[in-house]
Length: 608
Image (tube, rainbow, N blue to C red; front, top):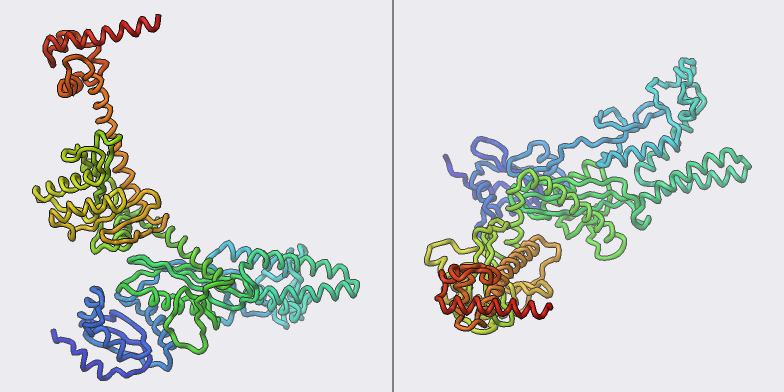
């Protein structure tokens, strides 16, 4: 196959805004992108110093031809890119996952227009408002319109000629008060169209203007002593006022703005859109984007903004976003609010997108548990600044009782789940007295000395239950074994859930709701539980052995043999001479029976 000469291709690409297309050897369109400077942007794909990721390198290796389209402005390139991606759906472009057909409210292009909802758009001059991601909200609005403005629901051809000829008669809807009977000229077309204009204002979020107009009409009707008309207007006024009070979430001075926020994962991103008019949210929707080339949040959000504004036909001149957008357009102002009402709007959008993201990811993970594991491990790798996934994690904990019976325990998690068959206990051999640091040093050394000797793979992450002291002790052993750079090691201090790194003076704090912190806490708690269980058994055994040592002729070693054989002091007390002789000599057996008989006699005398 002939090698693609990108240098020759670049010579023909101008320093102008536009859209570029990459084609493969089979003349299949692979990727569409936009640029404020076409030549510089395309050249960046072939520049080794830009550090493009692996997926992008694969794309570049397949390029066999480059075409481009010049436009006047960067914004034109932005809009053209979006329409071309939707039309051609190239393999390496972001995939917009939005398979729902959302409903619209239609104002039909006809005499005495009907208003109803539909999922099908017909280019016949009718006005479509929406789409509505919330079907319940759409029906609420339609119910409000029905209660406030009596409109026709029939599909009669209400031309002036047909009405004047008397072709129609009013139906039951007229008798019920749901229609004013334009079919028999009981309502003029001008009056009907005035209602339609008010309804259109409501659908566009301009309820304030409609309410003010109704208030003026109501006052005039009262002044003219037309109380019946005033009552009808008052009822309409109350309905609209209640609707506005339920819908308003910010100061009504915020007029005609678009609000966007994004929540991103390794493979997916989610973008929420709020359309705000006069402090009222009139549209809201969240979409999912599937990444193809490890796109940045800015690239994803820019594409989503173009998609939403085109879909909802928004002409807002202000767009509220969570971070700066590199898009130069005199007609649009991007705002990143820090405080105030606009910040509240952005926070509301972010709450919506986070909720949508969690809901969607939960759905994926229920169907594919391995997806959750990969996501969780990837998040842990990022949070803990690791260079590999922590598929194998080990956690150490020490236990002792007033310096006696010291033990260490290790628990193992594989793919973020307990692997109980790999749990281990350590009876401390080299430490005398209450020395938690030396105990940790011994346990870590013994564990990994054996793993190295047996040729087992080391864990990717080691968690030490304790602060800087325990962590330093563990690092001594790892350095002695020469493996301190092969694994990530952290210590967790109980009081404030602080995470310490070797040699780092200051702790790191993870969000209390972080999944990474929850896994580490689970590890620590499991190590503590496992260690305490073993420690209690050893302590109880030691306490019983101490009691047996009170018997004349019974030392520590003999006491431990007796407990190992009989399992408890109760069974030793109840044992016959023949049974005791299986473990001890005749003299010791006689002393044991004499000790417990004396003890029983003293107990009886005390009771009597």
